[in-house]
Amino acid sequence: MDINAFWHDVLSKKREALRRYFSDDAVIRWHCTNESFTVTEYIRANCDYPSDWDGTIERIEEVGNTIVLAGHVLSADKRISCHVVSFIKLRNGKISELDEYWADDGDAPDWRREMRIGRPIR
Image (cartoon, rainbow, N blue to C red; front, side, top):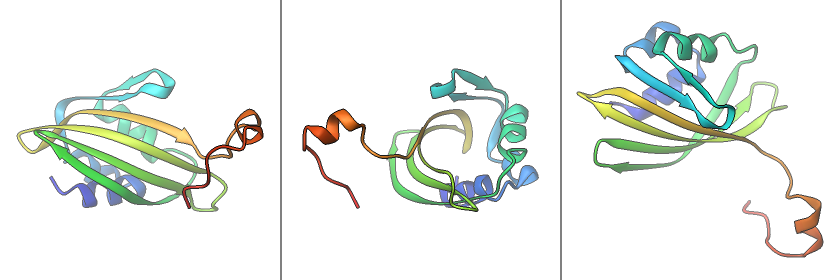
């Protein structure tokens, strides 16, 4: 599977193109919101989101039949910035399981800044 093409099609909301990456019985889980989707539901949730997206892949690791992707996603107007870590399990070259963990980007909490520890990554 071409992970870069998949990432591009997700961000571009290419509804028909997305379907070809998945096994018919694939399961998609968004753990941070406790949601599980069929392929059709996932494509609908992704493509019907009321904003356009841009983003970059920050890291890819492959372990056996699993691809781990860390990415940065921005809304087109740059008002939303978040990171995602995706565990993409493949079967016969198609996604059979997709487990994703989404987090909104933001500042460190006050209590930690008051400790004067850590520093910005970028």
